Length: 113
Length: 112
Image: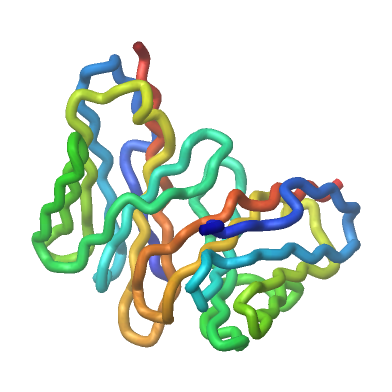
């Protein structure tokens, strides 16, 4: 049983570019949440997807957008990259919209130069 | 906005010593979760507490949820080198929100 998988593991982009990160949830999970974790800090909630719709959103600008597919996998898109977007991007899957255990992927380390 | 603070930010102990991290929220939480993140790794779920005053134990780890559901603690008895990592509390505010708000984390270093 595969856990949460994210791709790519590492990525280097230039300021102003756009990036797409991908996440496959744990088998049986239907909810995907995305987090941004800067070095030395706790994960910050970006948004959550359930039934292919964005259900909750944190304090992130519209440059951050996402999508959930019918198979529950998800993408995180970031436009007009800034140096400050450099971080570890974590995907977490869970079952349903209730407050249950979240399973995190290994993350994508994004570096913006 | 809602803030979840943890103290201390960093703790260095000798192997065998006890360790405690405290978590405090500015608002009441519906429940609280604890995660461990090893250096270079990702957060791994440890436990969830739901009831006011709840205490749960996992081997050498003891978790407590405050009576007012605004604070929590994690205590590790007789630390081992395998306990090294950052411990995060994370809470749900309740109601219609499903946003999991992470604390600032406590980095534990264990010297053999």
